[in-house]
Image (cartoon, rainbow, N blue to C red; front, side, top):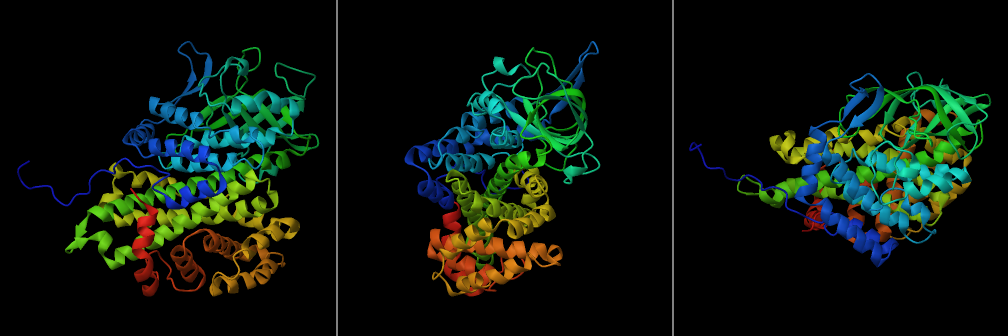
Length: 548
């Protein structure tokens, strides 16, 4: 309309490469993987930063999954229809080797780092479809408890062919896996599960001892997966079972989808309530040791929670930086104004610390360093996932009212931001897991202290924090430890992040993080870096965070 001219509006986010524009991530891949891995992630990064990928993400979250319980003639279907954009996203993720492929590679080859970097870059596009991708990656170490199942299932779970649809495994070029743990009455307390598993003499599933399961699962995501790792009570305690959607003879396994959850975010991904009625399953691991067996899967999905949250942080940050580089107020670009520089630099510090920690933990998985990953993943899952909602909210505010509308993607990121702190164990569950690790697994404590100790001598404030770790760890084993668990975990996590940045990041990044997070030169919100820190580091930190 001729009422006004449109000026000072920020242009659409240009195409960018989610790897090469992210210095911390690119350096991590160079450090812990080879040139071939870098080249592969770089290709995926270009797709991640494309307008086409952003369009798929918008479509998949606008057109939600649709549950079809019955056919027109009344037979049970128990299927979910997805928008074509969902399948496009899945094709890229599976084709990029983001599922179980690293578990088929020898230790020390950088396969998990390559996959972690790819998962991070592609997570910047859309988080919902990466739930089944993550569960497929994580199923492999749990399946290793049953050699016959592992031999049969891990190759299709590691396949780069996305083959959607419910068919017998032998008829598929690739497979996707899910999990079913929580029930109405228990939530994270899976020992309270009431689903029963009764041993049988055989049946239409192969790979080990067979059982029939009866009960329910209250939160079962990606119900169109080909198989699920499910917990159920046996005569000797909770067991873990592989439950295929389709049996070897082509018949559907009883798996009644009752409804789909109406979630705050993660709307592209179908999360269902499931009834099991004589459903066939094969035991994975020892009977009565199902929780121990599935924890190998949970550890891997928790790593992905850290990776996914670091990607959500970065996706929000780059939108804030892009806006500030193009929006003027009070006579100057926002990016040139000292207070906005403080906010953006502070957000950039948080993002780089999260990314560096996540990739270091993936490197630990590559190296088979279970002692470090055991405690490090629990710390990162708590802290990085907790920081994400606050950081995304601050990035959104950088855009003002424009951040609160749907078009730029920040509103979707804000709805997504709390999720990883809830899934795979909420904050309290992870904090208590850290206490267990500290109290029972001295090798993990030793590995943590050794890792942090590598940064001694880099910064006086960091050295003081390292000196204080024995007292902090002692608090984790006192009788009143549970009440103070969160503060213990926070201290351990931030010190670990600071030590990694001291060793691996440019000095300007490491010093700003250490002085602000450990040295007291920071307030209670983002954008409160000490003036001296902000003036020295702001532009460098912002440019490093998003380089076109």
